[in-house]
Length: 109
Image (cartoon, rainbow, N blue to C red; front, side, top):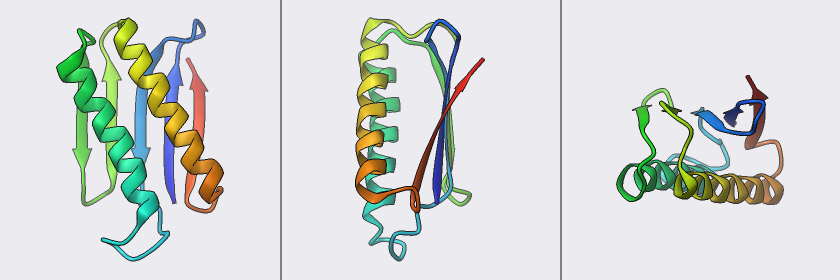
């Protein structure tokens, strides 16, 4: 199962995204849930870096199946839109494939 934790401040500002684990929907290379989640998360991180002024610190460990993205400051307007879009996509994947393969956690700090 892939677990994604989206951490926001009490004011609703994004602080950190952590994606952990492999979905287990199918064998490696054929897992459409893992592919969808990876594409949404990685594309959002790349878009934040190249299309916005949002300062991020991102890291990935493919072997362990971990991706993290932390925000040095409050994401700018474009960054927030990208992150909201990612969350919408992840919620759609979770809705379609259920809690067996993808779990979304929302954490407030």
